Length: 104
Image 1: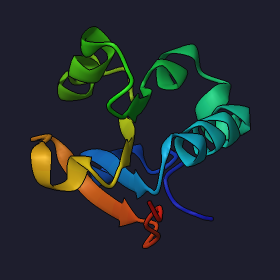
Image 2: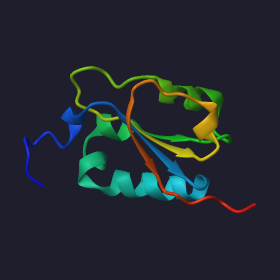
Image 3: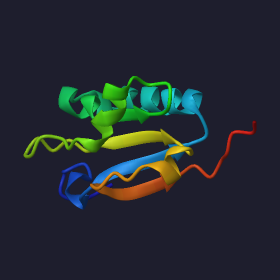
Image 4: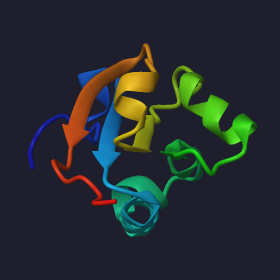
């Protein structure tokens, strides 16, 4: 839609998206990276991050880092619902909850 052509990057803060499980995280990440907004820019693509318990600790820690200043990249963290109560990511400006819970 209209606007200043910044792709929403001026809105401020990272986006934290809660999803029911790792399959949904992988699906959403793949879809985002296939889009022009997130996949066409190599720096932006690096900041579409997954967060779930089966990731190695160094990948999990990456969600607490911030994209380099001036690059215009938006950090998007795709997390399982488990992360809701166990972590705080201080630069999150938007939270999106898919509203679905994986049944055990």
